[in-house]
Image 1 (cartoon, rainbow, N blue to C red):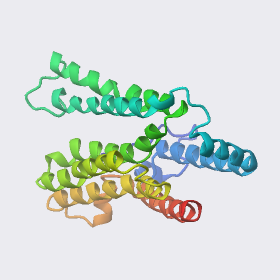
Image 2 (tube, rainbow, N blue to C red; image 1 turned 45 degrees about the horizontal axis):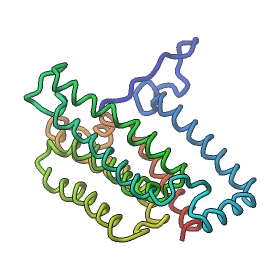
Image 3 (tube, helix red, strand yellow; image 1 turned 135 degrees about the vertical axis):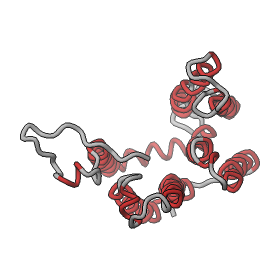
Length: 261
């Protein structure tokens, strides 16, 4: 993972965070993300606090009818599984794209076909799934809330990272096997993953495997770069980003414990 490059300085020629920014410890893009996330998160929390009584009324409607609006009726679950099948087709990008296949030439017809499957991610993951959820698709909401979070972690970490490592079979079992186990749970065990389990997956999952990848890269570079771990980490990713994530995760888990337990 390359070091984050600072953006253009202020008119004075200086950066807001000085050497921390020019040396890559703080990335301007991350500043934007964290600020937007904090403001958006606090705004959403404030909304729920101010409208709690009305939201309780909506909750009762959902408990009585299964959804606020359910035009799909009894076919909602069928459509959810069809949507999931469409989502799975996006994995074909790894069979055709030159980025993942040595025998495929860049910009060839095969490579372009792989990019088409990659381009289907946004409509299949986002638009179709969200439309089904808004129309009362409870099963689609369950699939999105737990399975797809795990699936996205597995896709990124296995097919784009660990598949090229010596321990690829270990990660195949952990990540792809984990996806299969979650999928079987969705099929055989109705409501198999509750809100607390989903919350833990959301909070811990991505960052856990991100740290595993950073440790792996550091091990590969330890013979080439005779430097302390922290300095080598700086050349791979922004340490403050992950420190910030860890603090966020701790706060979110503590809050989730009281809300979902």
